[in-house]
Length: 262
Image (tube, rainbow, N blue to C red; front, side, top):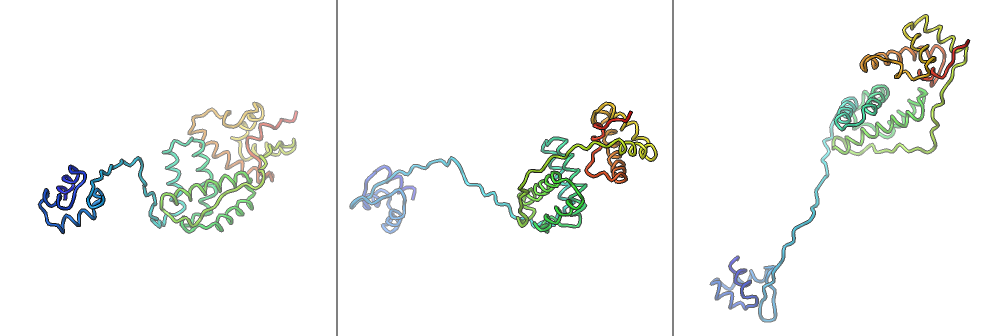
C-alpha cells in the first residue's frame, strides 16, 4: 500500500487506471485502498492526493487515578508513617514536634483501636466532644482536628483508603487567645510550698522564672536533649501541681508574670 501512496503523491491527480498501470495491482485491492485512505480524496471523475501534516502534541493527558488499596492500616501506623513523611519533607522541626505532641497526646489515645479506613465524620465529632469535655482549649482542638484531617486526606490521596471520611474544620466564630493567668499572692505562696515539699528540683527553676521574667526555654541552659527531657518532666509534675491547686488552663511560663510578695 505504501507503493500506491508514493505513486499518488507523485501524480497529485490521477485515475484508477493510472494507479493500476503504475502499481501493477488488481482493481479490487487498489479500489478499496483509495476509498479508505485519508490521503486520497475524490475529485470529480479522478482522485487527488492530499498531504496530511502530522502535528506534534504539545501536551498529553495523564491518568492520575490511583486505585484504592483498601488498606487495613491502623491509625497508629498511619500517624507514625505521616510523621516520617513530614520529617523527610523538610517541615520545620517545631511543626513536626507539635504534630507529634497532638498525635501522641490526643489522636492515638482516642483512635488507637481504629483502622484508618473505618473512621467516620461521626467519629470525628465524638472526638471533638471528648476533647471539649477534657477542657482542652478551642484553639488546640481546632489544630488537632486540622492535623487529623491532613493525615486522613494524605492516605486517601495516596490510595490507601477510600474517600469515605471527608470533612472540613471550619471556624464559625473567633477563637479568643488564651489569657495569661497571674497567680494571686496566696496562690503563689501555696505553689511554692508544694514545690518545696514534693518537687524540690522545680523550686529554683520557678524562682528564676519569676525573677528573670523569661520563658522556661531561655532559662534552661542544658543541651537540647537534656532540655527536652527536663521539660517533659516539668510538664508532667507541674500538671499534678495544677490539679492540686485547681488551676485550669494555666501554663508553666505564666509564672514569669508573677511577683514575689515582699
